Amino acid sequence: MKIKVSLRILVLLCLALPLGAVYAALHMYSKGQQDAVTVEIRAQAIANALSLHKRETGALPKTLDLLAPKHIPALGKCPAGELFVYQPRDSGEYVLSCPAVFFGSNPYRYDSKTRLWSEGS
Image (cartoon, rainbow, N blue to C red):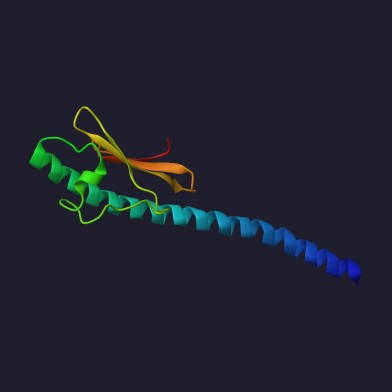
C-alpha cells in the first residue's frame, strides 16, 4: 500500500515539475511581449518629439531632456523604470533602446535609419 502511494506521488511530481517549468517560461515570454509593446508605444512618442525638434532646429538634440516639456509632456520610461537610452548619430539618425526587455536581459532597440525594432545586443 505504501509503495502505491509513493509511486503515485512520484508520478505526480514528475508531471508537475515540467508543467510548472513550462508555465513559468510562457509567463516570462508573454511578459516580454507585453513589455516590448509598452516600449514601442513610449518610444513612438519620443520619436515624434525628436522629429518635431529636428524640424524646428535642423538637428537632433544632444539629450532627450531637451524635448520636455516643449515637444513632449514627459519622457516615457522603460518597463522596469529606467530611462530610454538615446544615441544620436552624426548622420542625423538615432537609436532608442531599453536595456532589459525580453526575459529581463535582452535590450530592445529602434533604429531610425532602418525604422526597425530589434532584440539583443
